[in-house]
Amino acid sequence: MTRLLEELVAGEGEKLAQKAVELALAGNVKCLHFCLDRLMPRRTGRPLDFTLPAINEARDIAAAIAAITTAVNDGNLTAEEAGQLMQILNGYAKALETYDFAARIAALESQMKKSP
Image (cartoon, rainbow, N blue to C red; front, side):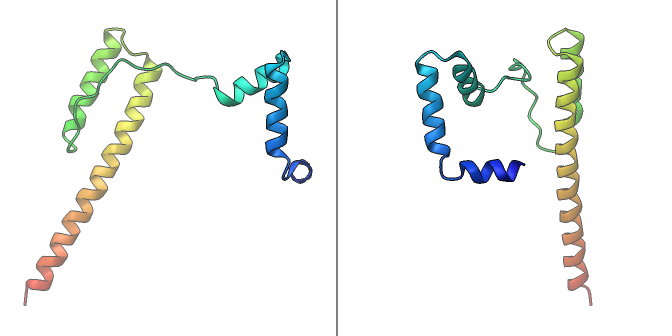
């Protein structure tokens, strides 16, 4: 069904969008709502007034986790927001770990090539 609809409006998308905007500007509330939903989707969160400490190596993540914990304890972050930040930190930690392993393997391979 979706492909059929896509084929029906193929090449007409710009005209349809223009018509929806015209109707919205003319006061059609449904078209106005539709246009605003597409142009400015609802936010699922709020901007955080929280800055993580700089993270340049794996051990810096401990300070970031401490800052998140303190912010939750002080009521500056919700548990959900803290959880999302922790996911970001976990991803960053994995990236640092992968980079570290790759660098160590490259160094070992280089040493092995130099050894007789």
